[in-house]
Amino acid sequence: MALTTRQRRPLPSDPPPSSPIYTKYDKPSRRLGDGGREEEKSLGWFVPVFALGMLRYMSATTNIIHDCDEVFNYWEPLHYLLYKSGFQTWEYSSEFALRSYLYILFHELVGRPASWLFAEDKVRVFYAVRLFLGLLSVTTDAVLVVALSRKYGRRLASYTLAMLCLTSGCFFASTSFLPSSFSMYAISLASGFFLLEKYAMAVAVSAAGVILGWPFSILAFLPVVFYSLARRFKQAFLAGAATSVTLLALSVFVDYQYYRRWTSSVLNLVVYNVVGGGESHLYGIEGPLYYLRNAFNNFNFGFVLALLFVGILPIARKKYAPGLVVVVSPVYIWLLFMSMQPHKEERELRHCSNLLGVLGVHIDSMKEDKRAEALEKSRIFSTKWFLYPIYPLICVAASAVIESFPDIFRDKMVNFNRFYLQTAKVLRPFVLGLILCASHSRTFSLVNGYAAPIEVYKILQHHDDAGPGSVVCVGSEWHRYPSSFFIPNYIGEVRWLDDGFRGLLPLPFNSTVGGTSAAPSYFNNKNKASDQQFLQDVEACTFLVELQLNRPYPSRGSDLSKWEPIAALPYLDREFSPPLYRSFFIPYLWQQRNVFGLYKLFRRIRN
Image: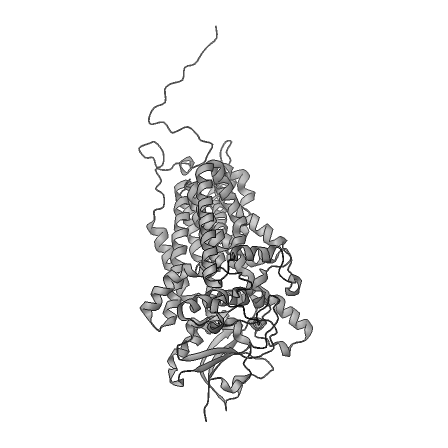
């Protein structure tokens, strides 16, 4: 007679059956609640919003401008919409129409009221827009952190929050006026909605990030979009389609209002970069490790840990698959795609990538081989924002690896070696602290080493006795021009001086020929210099901006019979400073080992 066993009916106090999908309730319990297992509170909204708010405020008020593309393609058009003056690049010529005014108008929503509130104080308008960018970053990153907390627990969310706040990459990218930063906001928000199982909202935000932000970031959104469609196809598809159609139609309409012709700047940008828009090989190529080095500079060992996320999946699959795997996968997709490109620059950006002034070097003082070497070194300053969209995901991936350290030493069959387990637990805050300290050191070095241009231009507002119609002249330092928001109203114009640069420079918007709808003949898409871009009569200059380094060539400002220095701030000489000490702030050694030049503002002496 066969023996049978009867199973007892489960009691309310019994733990719930195991689920194939990991949640924070699957973690080993330490303190029992009413349900018989640990009752872990998820991270609320206050801590992420407060912490991110403080750091984003610091970023908005201290961040330097890392790329001349941010100034001439975004700050200057915004300045023109607000004040009817500013520089125009060939991308904004109606002949090419590669830039969408919808993205600029989105920031005018803050810039316009700020211009009314602060009247002639344009510097405050600049920082008002930056604070708005910081607010967007706070909102989107807070959603991501809270979503991680609710799904995976407070520890992973707290680690991610710390890295979002303090890593150099996130500190700088969060308040940069760039489409790639907007796509970064969208990726944080879409990933948060995805983890909260709000799939329709995740797809809608993804569409906004691609169309209103940076079209090429579509690759980074694909995993979240595809998985959301697989889970809730009808709702997600309708939300994505409605958002896409609305934004594309609005973009075309806005472009018509400014370019005065029916065109799609989004489509123009994609066609120009994908189909072709010039001889890209003329602007240099880089190896496949280019972006890996770049990401390491901004996240140090955090980036290495982020790449190891795939390696811990066999151990932590139950915890992180499929949700976190979907969220983190764009890191690998994006790095692979960008590294496969022989040229590491968006084609319409390349007027900035040719600059040699990043190293404080005049073209006409260099031999041919040295020019090429300096060009290769300078290119990193013009292209690092291409990784911005995946910056929050790098933080998530690295935090997940750190959080999983004990799992590496845990024996699931019998017991685990308690010594190694405790060591791994202690190692978690130590590694996180090392990453954050190195990041803060780099942030401090960059902010203090390269902040002089913005601060020097602020001095102009204290010299309005020069009279209306004064002229500010800039030579090889054109690429560090912080935007017309730092030019007081008594200044009549800003002009470039010929210091040997042979690429096409931005020229002022010309309202007499149509302003935004004009197609000036001096603009071209081949980066060929225009004969109108330089001021020929240097005697017309009232003020002069120069970077004076210890180099064997004369500068205009060295003639003290004509020029009086009215401001001089230290500027880190990248070429002659050791890589370690210029990249990271080490107390006492940073000042002693690095070499500094002087960023100067001169005023002409009138006889």
